[in-house]
Amino acid sequence: MEPVVPDFIRAIAPYVPGKPIEELEREYGLSGIVKLASNENALGASPMALEAMQQAMGRLHRYPDGSAYYLTAALARHLGVEEGSLVTGNGSDDVIAMAVRAFMRTGDKAVMPHPAFLMYDILVKTAGGVAVPVNLDGMDIALDAMAAAVDADTRMVFVTNPNNPTGRFIPQDKMRAFLNAIPPSVLVLLDEAYVEFVAEDKFYSGISLLEEYPNLLILRTFSKAYGLAGIRVGYGVMAKEVAQWLHRVRQPFNVNLLAQAAACAALDDVDFLNRTKALVRDGKTWLFARLEEMGLRAHETEANFFLIDVKREGKAVFEAMLRKGVIVRSMHGYGFPRCIRVTVGLPEENEIFISALKEVL
Ligand code: PMP
Image (cartoon, rainbow, N blue to C red; front, side, top):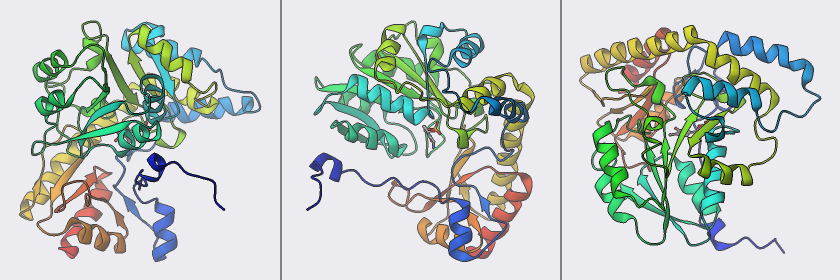
């Protein structure tokens, strides 16, 4: 006799993350694998963050500071917000989980784009909530349709900017019009996991809209531009009145000791961030030019990844690339069956990717 699992848990689809390098090594006996699947930072982690972690090692027998005092203070200074507006998490996933726990009851609805980052759907369903997917309008989040999908049972709305998996960016006037259409009683989670990669002439952050829209929660992460995916740190910026409820449901030591030290140092490593942005900008230019020469369309993006229309079943291309030791992301089940999603890598990784793609197509 097995323990009883509620139906709403049975209904959750398993999350399949980008294939880990070690798994491919084991399965195919390959080495020198290139992973361009999870929008990580190809440069590695900030050297200042690594140094800070080394120094923090001596304190590993102690619990971390549950309030993440120094990291919160550093973020407040960096972003120009009050400390009470910040909630740090074990990756930004953890902040999404807290928001869902704090604001949704069984049966409440959360409106989200489809396709979108899968954890929105999983975490809402885990709380017994109802995910209301709204199909993209081509490559763009269908903001009008999302607003129209909000009803009296809706407690949360998810928006991703730049979007994953399309890389598209919603300009400020459209974002404002959308926020105006959402009732202030509904929490809008604006996921800015990739915002550091947005071109300077287009850049704005939802953080600048917080005073006007106190129902906004801006989600950020150290996993992408800051190169700290493996240590798990993310944060949310929101009205203090919202933050207090996330703190209420937060696990007491949710950001580990090394992660707090690393994230504080990474914020100060302006040189690393600038090198990361340049790597992604130049890598995109190079990759787009090569793909165009191959007669392939890469979709415009403001993130560190992009979709390529491979003009055939993307899943087959993904699998053939795996056998060549290059991990990209299949968009099978994401509404883009002819596409693969590729993260910009180091110049030599980008070259290996292009050579492998030429062989595969
Ligand atoms: N949001 C988006 C849009 C993402 O793509 C990801 C990671 N793939 C996350 C959030 C979660 O990132 P993390 O938990 O590593 O901060």
